Length: 304
Image (cartoon, rainbow, N blue to C red; front, side, top):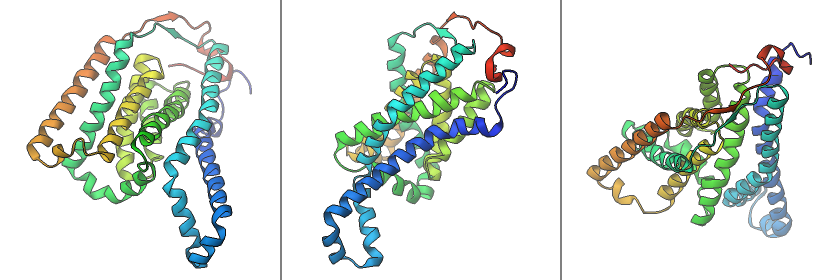
């Protein structure tokens, strides 16, 4: 590749897609391995209890019963590869003379964004209930959510609340959004990465939610210049979602209109306050300037 030319469209597109496809491929491979083990260990009993047409359905249901664990193992297996790719991109930026070093943001601000994630989860879910989107799109959401939200609560929090957000942030902000920023300005990159994030969630309800969250997560990444900020927002949101879905902790809120309204107002207010703090007080300064201009960078990478 000549240093004065940008990569072709399909090369850039592949750079955005393959980390997610890799993750899905690993999860699929683990599912196949689990299915094979189940089949090998229970073939005679399965064959005797069901006919040929429903054999696959029974096997599939067995895999679905453990899909949360399978997804967690797949995420853990993918994590080292994603970390390597993230650091490889950092090295590429340094080689291109476009890497920027920023001051560390005080730890307190990372606690703020964790709270923000919990608040935005509640506020958005309540907004969907008010707008009746939840009723209109509930079936497709429940089919997807039932795969992850099963088993012991501690396992669900560990997998859906912590492990998967870390992996998804590396894929969609640490790699996809960051690579988009090599070639386009922040706002278009935020929109495109949020559309990408929403599209892979498999249903309209989660897709709309993920698009809104994707915009917030990319903004936090741009603001903090750290993958930790969007990761903590994502963890806060997913953990609250798991707790609401799998416990009766907030049932009283959904059984009384007044309590529901108060909870919505509080969640929205907490989000607004934490977002204001992020916008107003998170201003890390650059500590090292890029050593080369965009026109001299290999691969035609430009930071706009």
